[in-house]
Image (tube, rainbow, N blue to C red):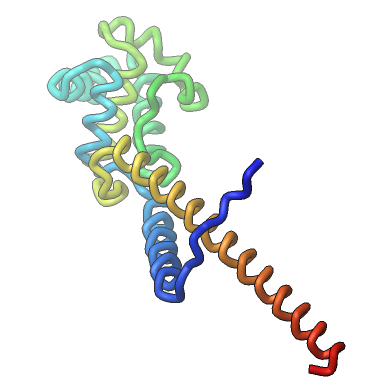
Length: 192
């Protein structure tokens, strides 16, 4: 197997790589707690529910203004819990399915939703509507989660490349130092 030799880095190129790595790390740190903006969060929840903003707003009014509060009590509690949870940093985007919502009373309100001709994902979207209108400042500035994740992956890959380049250069320089030290020791042994 042939050994691949990398072109030695100059001080300028090493400085450039380190500056690029520092900038990438700073951008990654800022992205670490990224969260969809309130409008993007709501739009994503509506899209996942395969619904429309008008339908979600109408469903919210029905759930909140139920004449017989007992008939939608579980759904109202579910929407409140989901809305409070969505404002936390643990939800940078709405869930892609209702599977993660079991602990919020998902199973208890499924029957109530069926009487409205609705389903869990629409109730989750109603929770997103409540959260984004009640606490808009709890949301971030990311408008496109997929683009956000692609950028994060690109930065992470570039940091790995830079780390490899710097390690190769470090190893090359370490080998040169060892060779120079060996040559100096040999010269000293010969009295030179």
